[in-house]
Length: 393
Ligand SMILES: *Cc1c(COP(=O)(O)O)cnc(C)c1O
Image 1 (cartoon, helix red, strand yellow):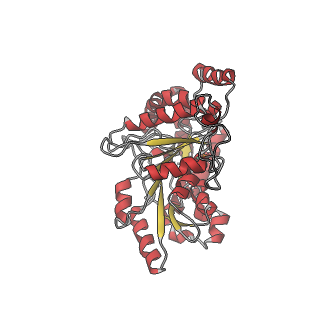
Image 2: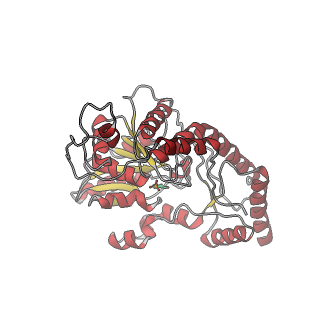
Image 3: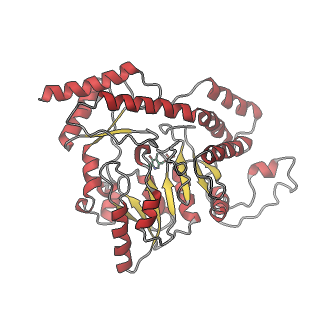
C-alpha cells in the first residue's frame, strides 16, 4: 500500500508537545508567538529585501486566514472577489462568509494557476456591469507559484489587493521573494496533508500594518488584548481590563499546535529538498510515456503535489482505478468549483466559460508524493503507470 500522503513527524514533535503539556499553558501563548516570529524570519530569508518588514499571525486554519485576510481588506456585501475555479472550496467560501460574491476565473493550461488574461476579461466585464472587483485570490496550485506581477498588470494596475492562497506553496522561493510574501496578504495552511503540518493550523503574513492590526484583532473575538497578555504576571493591566472593539472570530492557534508547527518549520527546507528529489525522479521515470503530460519543473516549485495530465477523462479514471488496485492511492486537485452544485447553481456557472479548468478537472491525476516515499515506491508507481499504458496499446 502506498498512501497518497503521510506527514513527517518524529521525536522533535513528541518533545515539543510534551513541553507544552508540562507547561500547563495550552492555548495561544509563548509557543504561538515564537512560531509567528520564526515563520516571519523564514519568509524574510527569501530574496525580496526591499519591501517593508513582514509580520505573521498564527491562525486555526488557512480557511480562517483567508476569512481574516478578506475581512481586513474591507470585503463585504455586494463586493466581488476574483478567484480561480480550479481550487479548494475554502478559497471561495470565505468570500461568501463576508456576504461578497466570487467571480470565477479560468486557469492557465500548464500550471492550472489563475489565468491573468481571464482576470483582465473579468475586470472589463465587471466594469460594464457597474460592479467592482475588490480583491483577487491567487492560488499557487500544487506549489507552482503564480506570477503576482502579471496578475497585478492584468487588473490594469488598479491597486486591487492580491491575497495569495499559499496553502500548497511552502516553501517556494521565487527569486523575487517567497510565495505568500509577494501579494498583499499571504495565507498558509498547516492542515494534516500540507507541506508542513500541526494537525490543523495556518498562518497569515503581510507587510501592511493596517491589515495586520485588523487581522490580529479579528482573530480573537475583537478583544484588544490576548489571553497571554491578560494572564501574564508581567502584564501592566489587570486581566479584565480589556475592551471589545469588534465582533471578532475565534481563529487563534493553540500553543499545542504551534509547538508542533515550530518543529515542522525547522524541517521545512529539508522536506522541500526531499520532495524535489522525488519529483525529479518521477519526471525522469515517466519521461518516456507519451500518453501523459508531466508538470512543469519550475525551480520555485514546492512540490506539494505532483499532478500529471492524461489525454481524457476516461483514461484518467481508469488509471486511477488501476493504481488503486495495486494499492497506490492517487487523487484529483481539483474538480473545479464551477462544477460543484452550490457554486454552479448559485452563480449559474457554465463549463464552457472555463474551458481550461474544466479540462484539467477531467484529466488531472495527483500521484503520491511525500518525503518518506522510497525509491522502490516510486518505481512501483511508475511501473504501474507504464504497465497500464502497455496493456492498453
Ligand atoms: C487545504 C487548502 C485550503 C484550506 O486549508 P485549511 O488549513 O484546511 O483551512 C485552502 N486552499 C487550498 C488551495 C487548499 O489546498
